[in-house]
Length: 238
Image (tube, rainbow, N blue to C red; front, side, top):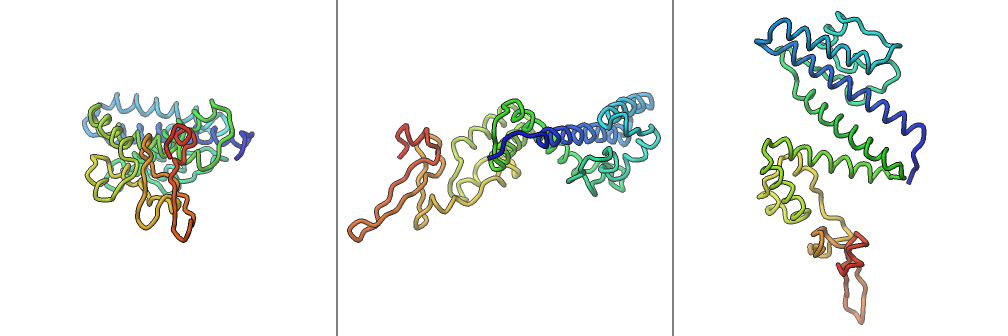
């Protein structure tokens, strides 16, 4: 476990900068490549995005408007101010050779938004959090964001309900769920400590696989199952 430090605040600041740069660059690239857009609309959007970009980069990293427009056809990392780690922005193009905004740019925009939202939420809590808990928060935010992208409230509610009712199960059963592929990818093998001879037991409350404890008694193997989540176990999920 770790507690918040100055480095954590710096990380949040860098995430915020990468997010603002990505959002401004993506919107500008769309305005620059969208056919049928009036010249005055295109220019107004580009100037607004340029202003956002300057605010994100700060006064120590000026970026003339002409250079900004030129940079939109290069690597996204080139728009970051000095001192900010490019991470997965390195090598990513906003506009492909055919003059279309790349799918990678849209995916990265979603990832940056989710990460920023997660870090802001954790920053408000101001409590200790492990890397595993941070990853869990990010995965949860990502899953729900992908569900929302399906377009309708009914689809979102159905997908969220499926996730809650079926956090684990047989592969052929899970394949029948109407979930986006990106959400299905979050399913993993049931932990070793919850399986015995291919059998596992769902918690009657949360439906997650329970922890198995095995011991020998008079030459026989005797086992017990208990939910990994202590409050559920205390409520009788054993």
